[in-house]
Length: 158
Image (cartoon, rainbow, N blue to C red; front, side):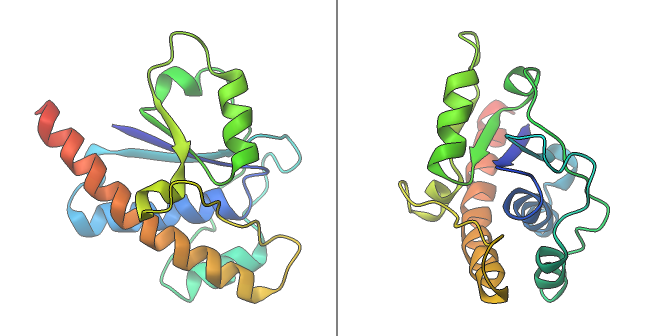
């Protein structure tokens, strides 16, 4: 099973989701069965570490994002991953526009797994530190729901 988190530049929301989801997989005993990655729609931050504010907020919750490096979405991601989860509607539209006809991956908004099918994870980049805390709260809720969905799919496929 493979999960890809997608945001605009891959320095705030999607690396936070990657780190948080990895932690939830560890706690659920599923870490060895699920590959997790993140990327951005655009190329602006390729090779850079997550935003320092995102890293500080993550550290406060026991997440270390420091080894992650931003990368851009590529065509192979549509066949490599089982889930491509967008942080907002614009990211989802970009995924839909690039989706190849033979792609059978689940494309959707990440917060659907927290019971918010139409809600976006807000981009905290241009705001204050409290925005990064809100993002962590939302991502944590969605991560719990996604773990349960992944667990169910793994059990069905076993």
